[in-house]
Image 1 (cartoon, rainbow, N blue to C red):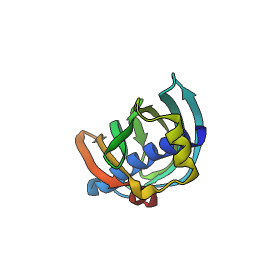
Image 2 (image 1 turned 60 degrees about the vertical axis):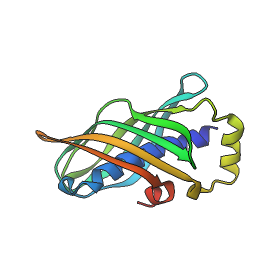
Image 3 (image 1 turned 30 degrees about the vertical axis):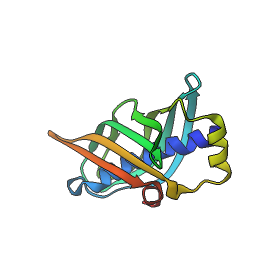
Image 4 (image 1 turned 30 degrees about the horizontal axis):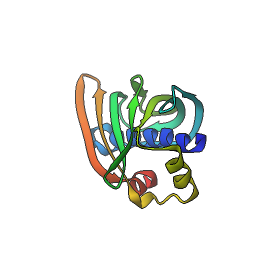
Length: 156
């Protein structure tokens, strides 16, 4: 279960990097290394965690003020991912940044389903939708994507 939640937390990091790098005005943002700093369960269906990202931002400083994402397996909603606090990606430079996210699993998503997914993960069955609000200096932008195949998101 813990390794599955680590995957979901790393997925939230991928969503943010994808949102930032997809806006042409924001420059080139990439993640080199990452480290899961903490995973804290909050009840049976929720986890709060921190991922430390080594990010390279070749453009201006970007602040991700909010991110709301959903993970689907086929048409079934498995859970939601939200950013717990704004994320600042300083630029242009390379540095370590902490990403704090909250993951809430849907009530119909059982522990047995998680075990099955860990034994034979078929990423082609999963899609992600998300909306991110970002700020570059005084400029604000909203970026959203619907039904991104999880395989494509992880490869980026």
